[in-house]
Structures are given as structure tokens and as C-alpha cells.
Image 1 (cartoon, helix red, strand yellow):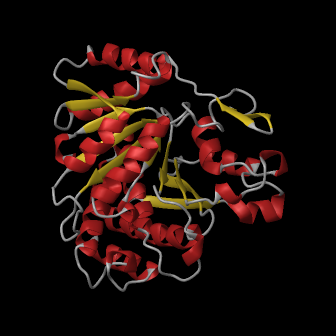
Image 2 (image 1 turned 180 degrees about the vertical axis):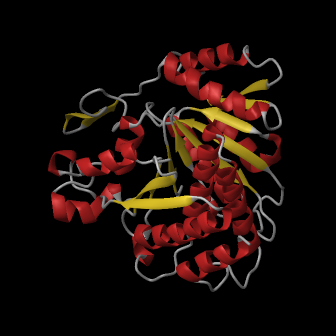
Length: 359
């Protein structure tokens, strides 16, 4: 909060459908602020192709400055796979923010919802704690340069970084979450092949497990985990894993819950956090006003809850819970859903329905 008691969020709309779902998310946040009685301000900063055209980079310095100055960040989806090379200004805003702000925990819940058919038919409620700062992700696992190398025209090498410190802190966050939920952590790995890197990750998780005697730990190999998640998602509570495995598993879990379009995501560090939709920028429907903003709105609700819990601000916690409940109410009604879920509502109309449901 600022000295005047105003919650300030850095809003970065991004590419593709990003500006549309960011506008919808902002409308819901403003309605929640009015409903729950807290002051809210936005610092909107261009990133992605809009910034590249104006400033020669997809992630200008002022974007990082705004993120550091704000209480939290709302990041729209970006089309980073279509950006030019890094040396030509094509930086991935998501990766840069995660690395430079040390947003080490990517928290991705997945649960079935009223009125939304789940492919497996089973009701479940799980959350994935994904290590967010290293692993195989080449844009954030090196102090300088990137960890994806073209050795010759016919040979490419990718480097994977796994550290005890990063593994321990994501494990500690996962165990703390499990202690407040159903008391079970599943560590996902490939230590049977990657004996040193995943072996180090597992050793760190086991060490942290000793700090939480009331939380059960089980360990599942990544390929088996994909099968178990499809067969019986209800058996899982908190899943703790490395960067790439978590990225893949969270998309699978979200689709099993009903739709990737519902998938909320929070990137959290010690000092700040960033709401970010789990899905991509969907350039094929950009500008049509039909994109489902549920994922980014749900991510913003997670951000409010995180800020409220950290600061002891009950209004923020209540607002986050109310937004989540309003999303469930609206998405349960076929007449108010977006088109990807079989409804007819456009992006702005859906946001207006969510605002109305806050009451």
C-alpha cells in the first residue's frame, strides 16, 4: 500500500488477447475494491509488441521499474515465441519478471467446478507448486546469457540448473500449503534417469519434509504422474516439482478440471507477486471480444488473497474469495459463460456478469 493506503498494481496488458482480458480483469478488480472498501490504482505499462514498436524492446526498463514500485503485478499473456532474438529486443516479459523479481513459486490450482463437465468425471481439488527460476528454462537459469546453445549447425545443447536452495524453498512453500489443506505433498521427478539433478531436488524435498511431520510425502516419476493424474486426479493434494514438469502438469490438470481457460496462476516471491493467466495470447481470436478472461481474473483474485494474507488486510482476502466465488457462479450458468465453454458471452459482458455476482 502507498502512504495514502492505496493498493497499486502494475498492469501489463501484453499481446494478442492480453489487452482485452486485462481490461476485463481491471473492471472486476475495481468493482471488488468498491464492494470491499479499499482504494485501488493501476500503473499501466506497455510490454510485448506494443513496446517493441515504440521503444525497441518487448520489456523496457520502465516496466521493471513499475513492477518493483507496485504492490503487485497483473501480467497479460505474451506472444514471446514470435518475438525477435534477444539481441534485437525480444525479451520474454514473463521470464524477465520471474527472474529479476525472484518470483520463485509458480502456484497453479486446478479444481472441478459446479456446472463445468470434467473429462474424467471425478471431482478434485489440487494445487501445483512449480519451481519458477531455474530448471531447463533457458531465459532464467544463467547469470549471463541463456542456457540454450547451438554448438554447431547440427548440434544444440540445453543446460538444466537445479540448486538445493531453490528446491528447498519451493518445497517449503508446498509443505506449508499442504499443512493448511489435506496434508499431502507429491514430489514429481525423473531421478531414475536424471540422478544428479532430480536426485538433488528429491533430497532437498525430503529434507524439508522432516520439518512438517504432519504432512505426508510421496514421490512419483513424471511419466507415471501424467497417467495417475488422468486416471485419478482426486488422489492428489499439493504437487511439488521442478520448472518444466510443473509447466506441463499444470496444463494437463487444468484441462482435466474443465478447461485451460479457467486456469489461474500466481508467481510469488518473498517481496511481491504477479498474477498471470496460465494460457497463451491466442492471436487467432485477438480483437474479436470473445476471449474468456476467467484465467486472468482468477489469477488476480489469487494476488489479492496473497497480498491480504501477507499484510493482514482482511478486505483483500475477502475480495479475492468473492471474485473466485463470482467466477464459479457465472461459469456455472450456460447463459453467462464465454464461447469456449459453450456460452455466448463476450469478454466484456462476462466481466460485467462477474462484477454483478460480487454482490
